[in-house]
Image (cartoon, rainbow, N blue to C red; front, side):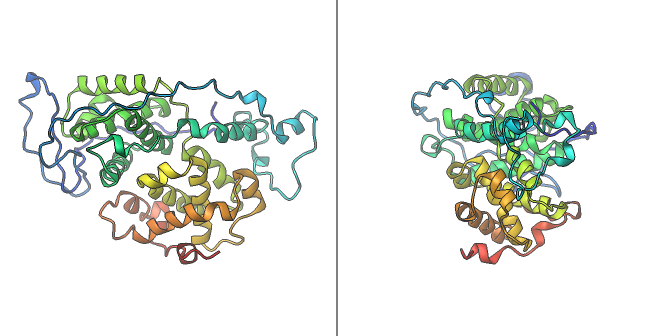
Length: 375
C-alpha cells in the first residue's frame, strides 16, 4: 500500500557512462570467452564519473565461512490488530487525538490515495516490524569487507542512483538489500560491485516506473561483468532474502517525520535527507539504530542545525514516538558526519547536497551544540 501519492515524470534515458571511483578498478569476474575481447585497460577517472569497486590486488581464494542458521521468519503481525486512535475516531469509537497535536494530514483529508484514516496504523505497524528486516552485524563473517569498503560501495551507489535519476526510495531499498544479503552470505571483494548493481536493479524494479535496464548497469561498470552474471546474482539475492522486499527503510519514516516537522520547508527537508544519507554510509549507524530512530534523529539534528525552535515538538514526539533524550546519541553521530563531510574523500553525499537545487544545505555550518553533546 502506497502511503504517499505523488506523481513521477518518466525518467529520461541518458547515455550512461562508466562510473569511476578514485583508487579502484573494475575487474571482470568469470567472464565467458565471448566477452574476453572487452578491453582490460580501463579508462582513467574523468570528471563527473566514478570507477568500479574491486580490490587493487589479487584476492586469494578463501573458504566460505559457515553462517549461523537463518531464523525462520515468524508469522508477521497483522495490521488490523493495531488500530490507533485516528482509526477509532474515524469510526466514532473514540475521541479525536489531543488538540495540542497538529493534524498533519488535514490537507490530505479529501485525497483518498493518502489513506488518512489508516496512515497512523500503518506507521505503527512499520515500527513494530522494522527490526525484523534490519541487517545484522556481518563484518565478522565477511573477511574481505570492512567499514571503509562498505562506505565506498554506498558512495558509489549514491553516484549511480543520481546518474539514473531514480527515486529516493530506490536508494534506501538498494542499501537495505545489499546489507541484508551480506548478513547472510560471504561475498568476495571482486564481486561486490556485482552485488551493488544487482541490488539496485531489484530495488529499481520494485520502486520505479521506468527502471534502468541490465545493459545500463553494464555500461556504468564499463562492462566489468556480463548480462548473465547480473541476472544470476539477482536470482541469488532474491532467493536468499526469500523475495521479501516490502521493508520499512529510513526513507519510509523520513517522509512522515518531515511532514510532522510543521512548519517545514525545502531547506528543512533537504537538511534532513542530507544527514540521513550521511548515516546511510556509516556501517555502525545502520547496524546500531533502527530505521525509525535514524530518521527521527536526522530530523532532530536538522532542526538543531537550522536553529528551529523548539528543537522537538509535541507533534514530532507523537508521530515519531521518540523524546529528545532518546535521539541525542544518534543525532550526535549524524552531526559529526556533517562536520567531516567536506574533508571526507567519499564526497557523493556532500556534492549532492551542495548543489543549489538542494538548497546547498551541506555548506551550512553543523549543529555545534549537538556535536558537543549539549541540549
